[in-house]
Image (cartoon, rainbow, N blue to C red; front, top):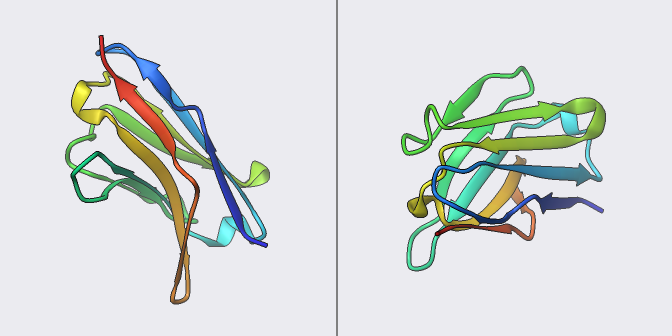
Length: 115
């Protein structure tokens, strides 16, 4: 059974940092591109970043220079280091991978940036 479990969300003040983790089970993790997405209330889900099996990385424009995606294939885990957080980064963050025609998602973790 495929599972994606995110952790690391929480409440942080503007300018602060958080680190998210996504542990994946049920697949050969190293074969898949892993993505982090976010969805704020009333807004469409957007790509935050993704990382291919070979380590190529793509970031959404709004997070470039502030967020860093990485992966540890030995731990079946994808990470998202978020620095210089701003209120507009407030959202539910979810990890994702696609296998064939199917897209798999975790349950999401809430990130709230506020004073």
